[in-house]
Length: 235
Image (cartoon, rainbow, N blue to C red; front, side):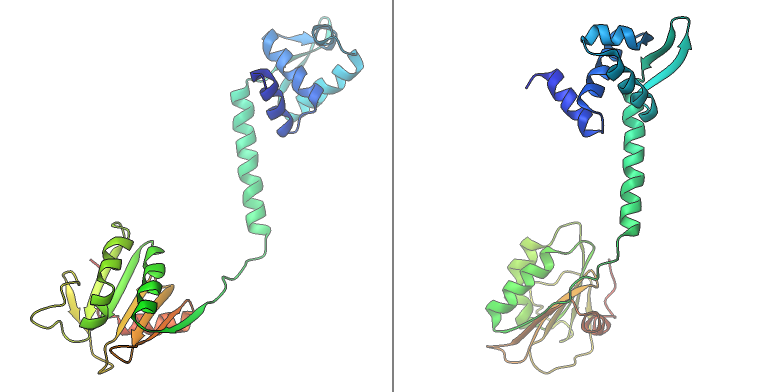
């Protein structure tokens, strides 16, 4: 497809007819005021059709119109001006659509499984989606299970806050990064809760060999887990 054919195709996508696009291009080529008769002669088409196209171009802002000594004359509106008006109109239209469409509530999810493999898989899914914050409360064993995942899957721009149910033993776990806040323990079993963007979460608790794993976006569960991590302060 030639460059001019592509231009004509794109002009039609903006609402011009095939002839309207040709008339606009002819006006641009003339770069001066012209009558419908002159444009029809340039294009070799019927004057009546050209007059209709010119009136439409003027109505749509693609051309200017004036009464001259030889009758009604037209000149192309610079396409930069046309483009700016089109972009403004498109932005307003998109805003009206967005405001007018019914709000769609995000679907709530709840996933449950068992075992460290399940915890690792769900942790990677959850932390990869983080945009602003990852808040973690943990004991030593579960955080070590997902150490490599946290290292590779969290965007460096995301703020990560750690807290320890075990008061961060003197030897540490080798995973959490300072500052690490001591959290009030709520279970004697290995436990880890990870809350992402205060909207979704994954947790493990129970058996040290086959823990229960839960991943969810349910607001009440996420908010409850977030409350358990409340002592953690963002960097």
